[in-house]
Image 1 (spheres, rainbow, N blue to C red):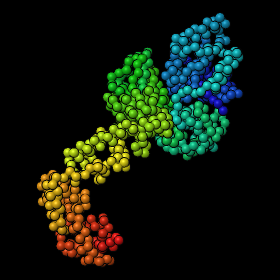
Image 2: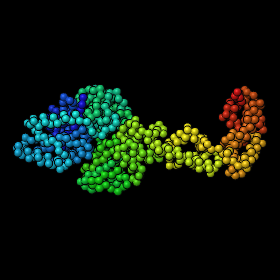
Image 3: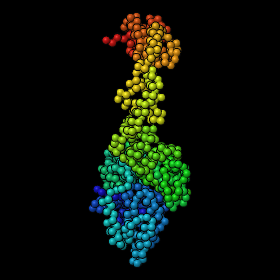
Image 4: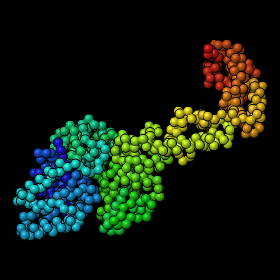
Length: 628
């Protein structure tokens, strides 16, 4: 059934609770202290039943000491019902509640002028007009101002008619993509266990839904759901909801915690926000000021870090980070109230741009660009800004969180302008193309400068300012297309042929080196004896690349050894003749059979092990059967 949520606001003792009782027949002051003092301390909850649905009413405390409760009550509210006493008119907390409702984006849709029976008709009419004009000056707009009293049924009926119209209107407030329940009360019901209540935001919540408690980040199980006192299998967005939880004690849950769909959000001690300082704030707000932040049912102290430092003047906005002393949970688009610590007063508001940010320096221009894109709200600009900050690539989940939609929707909006470069990572198609062209260009330059080198070291080809994820994707895509070859941290153009660039003198020199290696047999000369210049080193690598020579490493001596390929093949045949399978042999026996030294036999046998020419059996080896 359709529902709407309305918060009832106004100055203390202007009759909010009495009005809610007249509208619903329900008592919202349930604490003994509330009844004794005659004022609301906690939020009160009631509802009106109409043919087309329900309107939940949240009775907010009017006293300034209970602003936190008022902010919590406004969470999820579609509209506000302002209550003003006909006798007292607009009072200090009327103004405070109005400014908080405006900062939270909750429009005042109805104004009830209470205690109308205490004034003569002429005085009442004049008072109503004065209240109407006063509210217009405060920016409330042209809303219905309805006189009501204990004896004035006409006003109550008019108010009912106005409230019911909300059920036909779409809920315009910014909400998370899935079920999100800020906890405003925690208690125990005998025979049921732990119960939490709140106004459900985002998606629907069903009994079977997996759900997580934040910020403890603890998976919990739903035992039962209720709304307006009735058990439900599913509760819809905007409804007052009670959730009976299994396996968790009430002392493990705090007011301000959040029940959310699995994977929807995460706790964080750093949030990006766009701050708006009230025009009538007492003074500018400075970088690194500690403030009190109220959002949802959470209130916490945070350090305000303004992007660019300095201060924000009254009536102006700025991008900033809020650094909290402990993790809190919110969602992109959520509105906040900012209050000074001393004196304790509302000084502005903020909109969450990224609820799970990472702390940066105040002069970080790349993060500032992300905030600007988030404020503008376009997924394309957000993705570009995050990729710029991430050196070419960005997490798809980060884009989705800041763009306030799911990953599938983000990909659809980005279209062919972006591509997935790894699981959960994206980069712009133009960036990928530029990186591919840059890598190919760098390789061409390297090969032109070093024509005898087959491979170029990756460090000389790949830009250091590029993310490893983008680099890997670019290399893999070029290799798959047959444009490059990659081996052991080195890259070459597939079309590069070092042999084609050789001079006759270089060809003769390579033949000399090959002959030296071949003559050395299983005791080849060291590279220091062969390599006389950089060209010689490149010629050795060309022999290795053509498999005419085989490189091995003596790990114990930290030496690179190069054998001629035919010498290695002959050594294998010699061992096979000396130790026919299944005969075992030791390293020393192999050394004697080949007439070599330990310096060469150890890396040679390890090479044979790797190539499966030999097989280890403890400290012994045996030759394997040769492949057909």
